[in-house]
Length: 289
Ligand SMILES: [Zn+2]
Image (cartoon, rainbow, N blue to C red; front, side, top):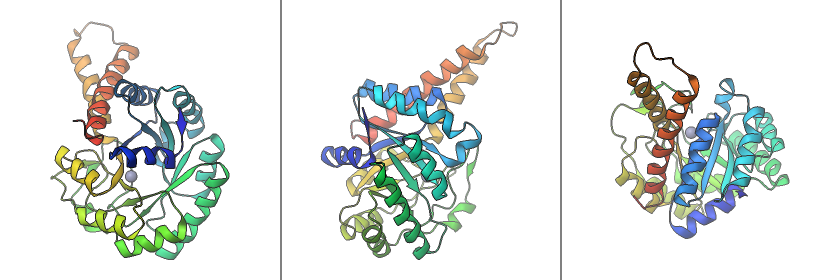
């Protein structure tokens, strides 16, 4: 069943959990994610980041994501992750996405507000809802194999809860991505999360659902604290991607040197490992693990 961001976050609010949001720029990651959600009977968000356009064009993946969401036995939201331009957001909405993120976090505050308002107006015509970002997590969503480097910590700007109040009130967004200590990509050291930022944003900005980006590599204990503080959507991709790749490498190693190597069984080994990794993450986000 396909739903928008508002509808799925209302479920998260009622059930006191965070919904997992997994990047699905390939058929294998999409089937792994929906498979895990159906197996656990949990709502889920499948998302495509603008930066993944070079892996698969959005117009190829969008119809497949929407079809899979519509036919799923659980509520599924089809979300654009880190839309950097209003043109790309319009494209996702026209293709049938039920949710979009406008990421104007690198812009001056007033410009971020102005563009986010435009995104909200564009999305509402389609019955879709909008996530936006305030503060900086040090670097943007990127491809695999990047290192969540220590250098990025210097570029982190934590979200100011008072600014968040103004931002949420003026833009009418459905969810706010906050910077409170997470980073995209792999962590070199355990992240130090500031949950007071999340609590203050919720208190000042009318209980807005908070989104955690860079959710891979956070400890189960910190996930639980994040949900308690008001995180309702957790973006998770790097470790599922790593689980899939590791399983594929293991499958290849299990073959004898003169065995033929076929793409299909290798990709299925990756799919199976991603589904298990996603299911484990979803259980923790739903406070079941
Ligand atoms: Zn992100």
